[in-house]
Image (tube, rainbow, N blue to C red; front, side, top):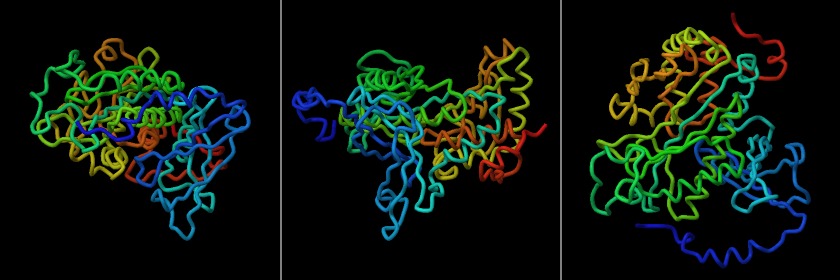
Amino acid sequence: MSVSHSSKLNKAVRDQYMKLPQGKKVLATYIWIDGTGEGLRCKTRTLTQEPKSIEDLPEWNFDGSSTGQAEGSNSDMFLIPIKIFRDPFTLDPNKLVMCEVLKYNRKRAETNLRNSCKMVMDLAKESRPWFGMEQEYTLLGINGHPYGWPENGFPGPQGPYYCGVGADKVNGRDIVEAHYRACIYAGVEICGTNAEVMPSQWEFQVGPCEGIEMGDHLWIARYILHRVCEDFGVVATLDPKPITGNWNGAGCHTNVSTKETRQKGGIKFIEAAIEKLSKRHQYHIRVYDPRGGQDNSRRLTGQHETSSIFEFSAGVANRGASIRIPRQVGQEGCGYFEDRRPSANCDPYAVTEAIVRTVLLNETGDTPKEYTDEAQLQTASLKA
């Protein structure tokens, strides 16, 4: 199996240096989304004291021409800290810092989707939208071949791998357990994990998170996953259909509830939400993967536990539907629903924003309303 050279370095030698005291200095690793809308970048700086809040972290900058976000003649981009997590790789008091990206003129970068998501979440805050996202991913060798698969063939058909146990059923559990523990240490709201239907494919779940917190926590969980895989010498891909043929793709199923759906009789609000979503299917498909539906078109074929990308459907306990109502929710008459359309490589800010726009702000059509500044937020109100 092809693994990276860096994973073969002597980790005991590294540990010798990592045990050196760092005095009162603090390492802050700034993390941001690059010009692809999928990739993450990071760099680290020294602080003279441990930051207690976002206000304690300085803005920074980076070369946007090297991340697909600016031209070389005007390349400086601003990093704006928005969320602090503990660093599970260099340990306390060091920090991971999720950042927004602004252009030279202080306007948001094209892949900074958090900006508009935050405005939409502020508009809908009275309904207290909660989200839980189920992040599927596939482990690969650095040669692009699925980790643990035969070098010149395929494993046996799908069936025994989902939630599997045993060396002939799952590959890479060490990575999964290391990621889980690292997320908990960091303060990520990770709530579960399991082996998925395709061998070498796994899933972790983040949530419930309210409003903008969903995107913040899932992006950091992805960063931690890539860093853990780096140590093990393998790659985690979020490609929605990493292996063509009779194999499951990878999604990011999104569970949604509001103050209204969680109360007794909330099923009527769930049904109303589904009705709104049904009338805006194309808009949601467009924002549920970074390439406007092209990635999801390889996955949402109507087979392998997916709905068709061309049709909207809903049902209780139906994993072939666009929207699934869990059986327990149908029985109890309140709770949440699951949108199964988002791709594994979706931007959680875009997904949660789109759902709130449709379900809570009652937007219709294919063009989302512009919320441009704080003044608009102060005067805007929810539609009846």
